Length: 70
Image 1 (tube, rainbow, N blue to C red):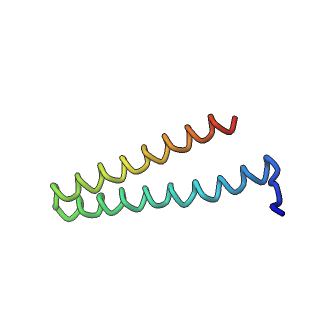
Image 2: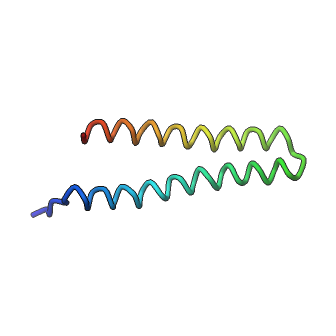
């Protein structure tokens, strides 16, 4: 039999998962910043845009999930 989580427990689990997604997007953007610092402009811009796109996609997914739960 599966154990049901309380609303507070669900929120805590969601915070842990969100933290990992935010770190992933931040690392991609930081790598783009490092490339920019090393004068690799074309590659850096693509990494920066990729990191921003990754964060936006996660934000949209989370907002959609939050609206369903609500």
